[in-house]
Length: 113
Length: 110
Image (cartoon, rainbow over all chains, first blue to last red):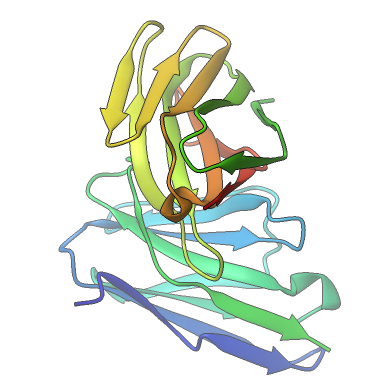
């Protein structure tokens, strides 16, 4: 059973397009996160979200927006994609806000051409 | 600004050759220090959380320790399956700032 799943695994798109990445967790956790891992392998938190609060890393452009239809899902929408958005995006979940003992998904490799 | 550095960047060991990985951090009040393991093409996997200087945690061949400025991940008699990138991360007392280090890429040769 996959604890945290993401779709798609690979996403290739052109500059200026709008795309979404989906994330689902079946752990019953109440908090979900999005991370970006760039080409140098640095992993940076973008958002944390539970049913009470969305916390946004101030360095994240407002072209990125998380949307949560329910507690088990947190999707990432990206508008007007740029070359610099190319990276691997990871979803994660935990029980409790700001609990960094997290379960990560397998990642989505986004390539913007 | 919270910062995390890790050394060495890469480490090659022979099977059974014990060693240590270092994580140095600067944080405005440490809430927790975390170790994760990441295999190629996969998401990080949580290993340990350390909260205060002097604390130690163990799991199989891994042992993590913490001082006021750094943490060490000791690997005893490693096996090839221990090959991975080991990531260190810290959260501050506000709990909303979570910073990863660049990782140490460990290769254990049979």
